[in-house]
Image (cartoon, rainbow, N blue to C red; front, side, top):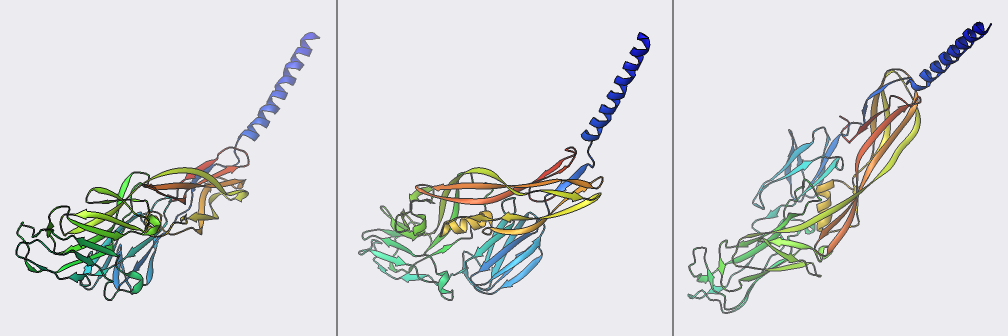
Amino acid sequence: MKKTKFVLLVAAMFAVSTMLTSCWSQSDSPSSDITDVETGVVLHSISVTSNVNANVKVGSTTINIPAGETRAFENLTGTDYTVTATATGDFLPSKIQTVDVSFTDEKAAAVVTFNFVDATSQSAETPTIPASGVIGNTIEVKNEKAAGVPDTKETIPATMTIPASTTLTDKDGNPLTGDQTFSIVAYELPIQQTDDVEKEQVTETIALECKPDGTQFSGDGATLKAYIGVEAAGAIVVINDKEYTVAEDGYVTFNVKHFSSHVVGVKTNATKTTETITLVNQSISFNAGENIFPYDRIFGWESDIKGFFLKWLEIQFGKTRFTETVNAKFTATDSGTGRINITQEVNHYTINSGLFTFKATVWGAVTVTVIPDSGQGASTHSGGSGN
């Protein structure tokens, strides 16, 4: 009798164990495996503005852009492009200008601005230099607005002052004599994108073309004063490998020992903190095979900065904030239900240049996670390319 009870007890325990095993297997097994999750293909664009009529080429496409207008190159699938603008005439810095554009998680829509300055528009001062080469009176040379360029695209205010008693020589050291024509024009350079805004760097921003090229000055040389912008007061600029601070009136003043093309660069470094925001967190039903889930993704940047640094932000991060519908994709081995979670990085930059500091918020990479209701088989994809 005892033996029979023992056999029945073992049989009962086996039955319960089998039922529990079956239950655990059902709850632990995914109803469907999720694979090949993509954040969604982002088609890039480049908006180009030119202050004069120019033919602009991106890839194999060339578009004519009338003076003062903007045109867009859209549906670009690549990552790196060279934007080339060609104008007809004699322009500074050249009748052909180029800007390299690289798209990143933080940059989907680029903005490029070309500013052509008429090379013949330089103002002139024509002093008479005695045989000794030593001038008797202070010479002041100012640039003027470029001829034929819209009022909104004037050359940059700049003044060169050559003090009295300065000896002037040519590039070979021979004294200048007779009537000499001195001219100066300051103009914007195409700002180039950097590979990492967090690195300390110098971004070339304007050039000052002083002629006749090679003219040399004795003593402390000539004083050159150029306008950077009141919005950049306190910023550090680099000219001829020396650092200067932008004054409260927006001007920077420095000495030069010769006439030439002097390039002004703005020195910056940046720090970044990152937070993650949720764009989507909801239940979904999906089919076997490929599934598409449209969602609104944020691109671009926000900042209250103006002037030069506004253009700096545009070339680094493209257009200001905008939203675009993007299709996330994933593949399921079977139909079912689950949950989709889409998050996005928001990068908060603090950009420093000397005593000048400003902030910018830039929207970055996206992560898509799809989880079947069983809790198994989840798959995630991070990034912005969707590849």
